[in-house]
Length: 325
Image 1 (spheres, rainbow, N blue to C red):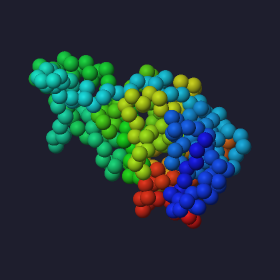
Image 2: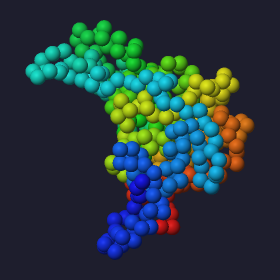
Image 3: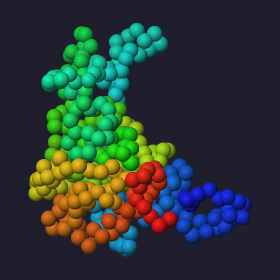
Image 4: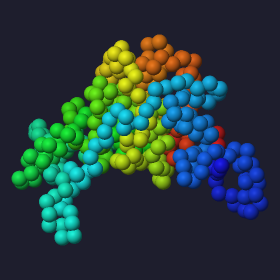
């Protein structure tokens, strides 16, 4: 058990009183499983833990709604480490063949790249679910065959955000118009079945999807959540394998509706009407994908505000939600 303090005690007397008071609000867990470390709201902790196990436990609700959740690795493979795409020679002398077959460069005006890449973050152009590639790859001389093989194996439309700056970036996953290779910012998510791409995209950018990314990511810096490429398959996501054809078709319709709608940065989800509309269309009511009780929407509104009030989400940025404290 441990407790998260809002501020460091200023004296021994205050520390003793804080320790006494903290026992009543202690969170289960230990330092070897530090997901709850630094999280102020116990309701947010309860929801995040429940979501990872397929239960939507909302504040001011005693019962949890069941959700189909699975590790991403059950539905898709992770993309390549960026060094396998453009890494230089390896070994002590660094005189061997390059690790990656490509050199990455900017796209020339009017160019249609043979090997398009989504390589770097640019928050302003990553506000919509569909994000265009920003670079292209040139195969090294004599390395065309390896470049072709790598592109065929790893290129995809769906990409996962590894270094999620929650207080400036909007998306946990994005979709490119055509298949491309992703680098350190947006590695590929290669689904076993293409029909699973859109449900994963929509879920990742809903409020529950954002919370799970933040929960599983490392949060050494306020306002930022990071995943390693090896941790991507462990990310809990909507289990699109259980969706029927009607639900999958509904996801396709939602993507068309939302693909060019702009989202605010994740830490502003509490006032992001596009995010709220996506949550509603995905989760609540008979016309939604998952058809949860519409009465839960008010409770999700509260959770959204509580999550946005977390320091590790807003990073004290001026756009943070304003509370009474």
